Image (tube, rainbow, N blue to C red; front, side):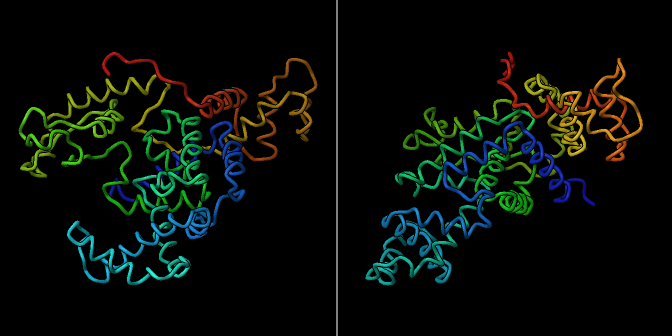
Length: 364
C-alpha cells in the first residue's frame, strides 16, 4: 500500500476528530449552540434535510436567487455552455422564460436543495458563509455562532485550522454524518487530503495595481491575498516557477532538505510550547485513557465503593490510583500499574484542555 494513501490520511483525520471530541466542554457547547439555533439535538441526518431547513428560513428574494444559481448550473450543463460574462444575458433570459411567470419557488425546490446541498458539502468554504445568508435575520447568525465554537476550542494540537473549522461546522449541523462526508470528500481530492501541506497559486484577483501591469512595482498582493498568506506565518514556503519540472522540484527538495528542515524546526518551536508534534498524528488508546481519567477524578470513597474484589482498600496508606488499577483489572481486564494510572489520568487531563495562546517566537 502506498504510504500516503487515502487509507493513511483517513486514519489521521479520524485521530484529529477524536482529539476534538474529547476537548473538555466541547460536546456540551455543541448541544447548547444547537439549542440556540433551533437545530435537531443530534444535528440533521443529511445535507438534504439541512438544505430544506435553510431554504425554509429564506425570504422570497433569497429563494429566487438560490433558484437562479441552481438553474444556471443546470442550464450550462445541459447546453454545454461555459459560464462567462458574454453568456450572462442568454442565461438570464432563459431563466425568465422558464420561471419568470411562476410565483411559487417550490417548482424548482429539487434544484434548490441540490444546489444548497452541494454548498453544504463543499470542502473548501464553510457553508455558513454563504452570501445568501448575510442579510437574513436568522441565517446571518449561523456563521458567528459557528465561529464562537471554533475560537473557543481551537488548539495547536488540532493542527490545520481549516480542517478543524470544517470539523466543528459539520459536526454542529450534521453530527458524525457530516464529518464522515467531509473526510470522504477530502480523501477523494489528492491535493486536499494532505495534512500540513497545501498550495496557493495567485491569479489577477489576488493582485492590486492591475492597471499598472504585472511587471510593475505596483503589482502586489491585495489585502485578501496578504490575509490568506498571513494565516501560514508558521509555515515554510516553496515557490515553484511555471517552467520548473516535477523532477527538478523533487530534486530541489532532496538536495536542500537539510536547511528546509532547519527552517521547519525553527517554526516548530511555535508548536513545541505545548508539546505538539505536528508530523506525528499517533493513534492512542483514547477510550481507555478516558476511562482511567473518569475513574481517577472521582473521590477516593466513590472509587472504593465501585470495587467488588477481595482486596481491602479501607486500610491506611492506600492511594486512589491503587484502587483504580484494581477496578481496571477486575471490570475491564486492563492491566495498568498505579503509577501508570496516575500518569495516564494527568496526561489525558492535559490533552483535553483547550490550548492557550502561544508565546511570541522571535523568528516568526
